[in-house]
Amino acid sequence: MQAFTDLRAVAAPLEMTNVDTDQILPSRFIRLPRSGGYQDFLFRDLRFDADGTEKPGFVLNQPAFRRAQILVADRNFGGGSSREQAPWGLLDFGIRCVIAVDFGEIFYNNALKNGLLPVQLDAQACAHLRARLASAPGTMLQVDLPSQTVTADDGTRYTFAIDPGRKHRLLEGLDDIGITLRHEAAMAAFEATYRQRFDWLFN
Image (tube, rainbow, N blue to C red; front, side, top):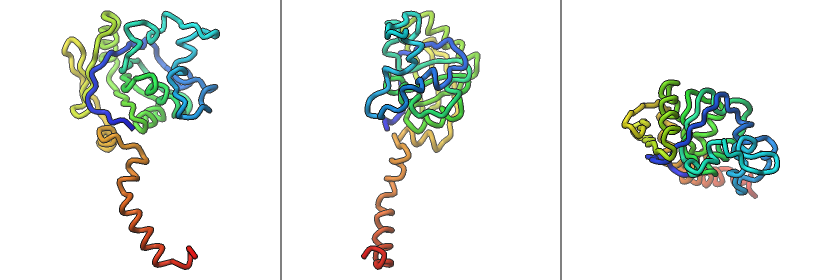
């Protein structure tokens, strides 16, 4: 997966609470292969009418936010059912970081496993950031994972917490497979020894 270190990018304010995984990525699209790309299905029913026409009022359809890489939400982002496709949709759209007051636990874990950084800040901080972004569309935020800080355009800096092990994996771009492959030499050595010791199993 792509490593996450320091991101300075356009951020979009999402003025909604309780955005669940079915709103992020509707269930009718979850059977598609990962290689197909999920960007067109992100917030599908919020972004588009039934005939596929864009809803101009939705934030990611507005010109200043179409290339946003950071999303600033409110409370309970990603609640609801387990769905790995929800972070896939965000990542395929180009969003690398979601800032919110709190997250659904399963979504939070799935995001980290796929290289999407979920940043938890208090309600006042999130409201301040969304207000800044709404008042000046196209405004950039800086999210620095090594220092665990979010810096607004007015210089206000917020710190966030993250598990050290998960932070390391993001910085190195290591998903579960990547972690396993770091032990590839040891696994190969074990397999060779095992085959010699129990050669009758392989004849």
